[in-house]
Length: 250
Image (tube, rainbow, N blue to C red; front, side, top):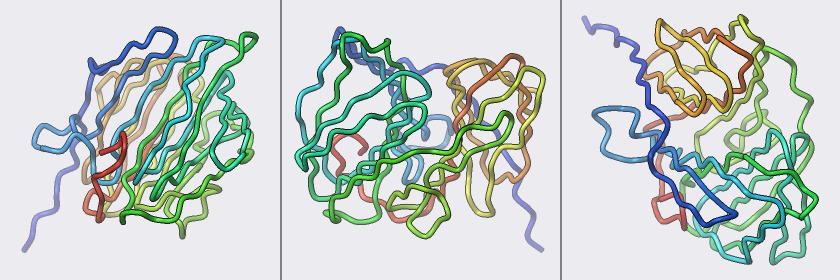
């Protein structure tokens, strides 16, 4: 008789991997590093979750991406995008953008002098195959409802409004102080979560802002906010086929 696997919750502190380019700064979170026995810095198709800061009047000039899916999640502020296809797009708290870079996609990012300082997440997903057709998705998202997860992207066959070309589902939530939410889970998947703002408690473990958790082989975990909090969560198939030739998200 086979024994059931025991759920495990692994916590990681704020990342110490960062780059400072003056008006543009990033902190790189590697989900695979939450797990003590995991050799890959990514976790299956989820390569990295980048906390990005852009001061007003900042330009990141035109550059290419290849073989990665790049998601821009902006809870406040404005990120402005131009690309080689002629798109001029604004991503903010009401809109999200997914670049399915595929074989190659060029873009630039900027903030204007009158824009507020920007703090956002740029999420890098490894696609299942190399040199796929490039695409870009941009559109409005539903208004958030306190203490309810929003499903924002998933695989191509999911019901989410945006897609990536591998087995990752992405959710966000705003949790009132003292309120609880159940972490999104799915059978035979693991869930990585990141506290963007605030502080939560889960299974007796406290997670402050910019700390993260990885729930392995578990389907039940309740998060309780110690203060008003914003979280994101990724439900990942760690055994999904992946490529590792992305420009950033290798």
